[in-house]
Amino acid sequence: MHEAQNPIIFSLFLIFTGAALFATLALYARQALPIAYIMLGILIGPYGFKLIDNASAIEEMAQIGIMFLLFLLGLDLSPQRLLHMLRKATVITLGTSLVFALASGWIVWLFGYSLGESLLIGMAMTFSSTIIGLKLLPTRTLHHQHTGEIIISILLLQDMLAIAVLLLLEGLGGRGSSLQGLGLLVITLPLLLGFAFLAARYVLIPLIGKFDKIREYIFLTAIGWCLGISEVAALAGLSYAIGAFIGGVALASSPISLYIADSLKPLRDFFLVLFFFSLGAGFDLGMLVVVALPTLALGTVLMLGKPWVFRGFLQWTGERPRIAMEVGVRLGQVSEFALLIAVMAQQTQLIGREASYLVQATTLLTFIASTYYLVLNYPTPVAISDSLRRD
Image (cartoon, rainbow, N blue to C red; front, side, top):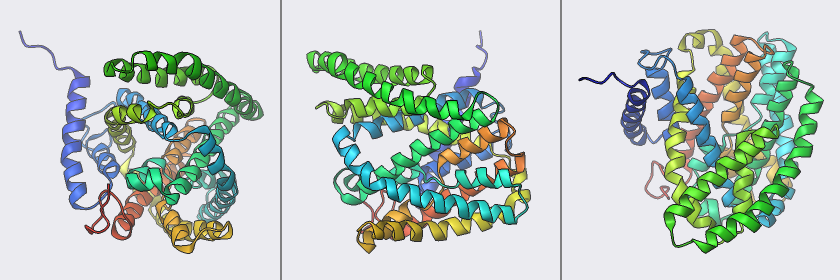
């Protein structure tokens, strides 16, 4: 008897078969693969050909990709190295964030958006993409060079600021006091860090050391640890992503951390495909006409201005001009956190639908343009020139 078609299996078939096709085209065009997945979501999602009408289940699974990304990022950072990096990056991150927020808010205010919408859009435009930044950073630069350390430290601080903005939006949206939300972050974050380090040191690392020859056990334990700390963070009022990052940092000093990082990368990539597809699937192309002009203006100012602002602050702290400019270019796009901020702000009725789509369209525009410029001029895994292509 013929079995009824399973909608989840059919959706995954469309997503990953389409992703393979679009990834091939993206590589020929020297674009980052996440852009291919976003375009696929736009094409076959609810606002495209409607081959996948309801992407809610896919979107829920996609959040796991962000968790694994930040977990692996945490694994690369020992606590001592993290504190050393963050001390210098704090001034740079806070200074550039203020400049980007004020400039972006002023631009959209000139286009007639309300003061409240302008402030929220300005905050959303502040951050750079962790995923794009790391995906286009050669592994050797990421792990061993000073440039990679600067980029990681700035991205980490920006991600923490973005979490604070999301908590603030929850409070302003009527789900509690915004001061209570930020106070919760200040109190619960150190408590979660302490719990994670103690549990990792006295429970997890001894267990892994005892059974370190059984690779399947290490793989399962690492996944359970990542998801478990993420769940504890969510119960404490923080985000799953922050919990995953803390779980990674708690294991960074373990000698097994490099093996865990390598073994979890395929799983991370699987869920990140779903994450970027869900972003594209939720984008209404019909709104592009409405927000086209402010999107072009805001996107152009950010892509031209961000590299020079970063360069100015980095040189002020003593970095060489060449390194400062490369860091600025690599951080020249808007973050995936901007998309989350836009969606949450619209859901809590803090901004209108048009303002939300302005943020989304500007983010996608900077993703594409910034990636193309990067692969033309700097070492990346998908660079145009063979001399620039590095793993």
